[in-house]
Length: 295
Ligand code: SF4
Ligand code: ZN
Image (cartoon, rainbow, N blue to C red; front, side, top):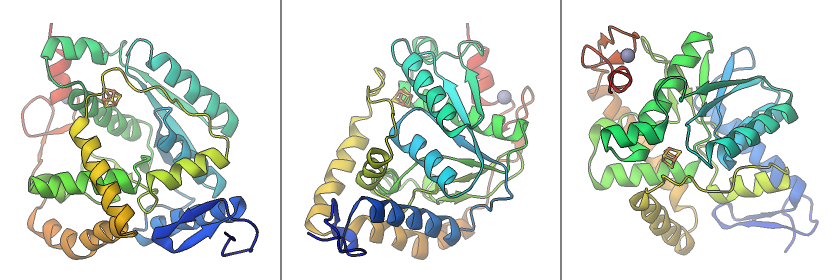
């Protein structure tokens, strides 16, 4: 098999793009997809102050790396979740990567905030990933606003977006569907959020990470129990295998045909601000401040 660009021996075959690439041409292809994804939604420019939410995992380190390669100066934000045996490794990996990029890294320590995930799970008996997601989103947003960043960036890839879309459609979660865009504009109290890897699959992201020697955390979080979501991804991979290109078609079709309709119908309903921290909320006090108040 030959690279479709330079005719050297190909190392990666991408059926959904009807293409095969050598190492260098694949990396070029990946960067071009990121540029296309950023431009399509006018996500940001090199004048913007960018903050990348980094967990130490493949996707977040990859997005940080590729933005750096494309000439964007982006700082990192790591949330130490306080999960024994996992968070220490994730933090060390992220710090080493920040050093490699010579980039600034902001660390928020949830133990110091009284919100270490295992403790919160014990107190509330809620599903770990639900409460962890809520707390992470809160600190991503608050940190971006506190330090004056223009955009908060996450490493979500096409598989994440399609998996979530599939789940939200299966259960018709209209309130989540309207927010399922690679770009969420800033609102009062909410930072602008962007997902530059939305056009790239999990596989393509892994290949990019491998070709660029990105040393990421490979152990799984011990609290992870998101089996339903994983099974959706598995089914979608089977469909993609039989019919390459389905994932990107499904997502782009949604963005083009459904999102504009949903966005018009669902104006943001959150008008209140938490009386303790100022975070947008439907109640008097936001969910995270309520968690902090628990004994
Ligand atoms: Fe948090 Fe769940 Fe991810 Fe663990 S797997 S870091 S609990 S969201
Ligand atoms: Zn609050």
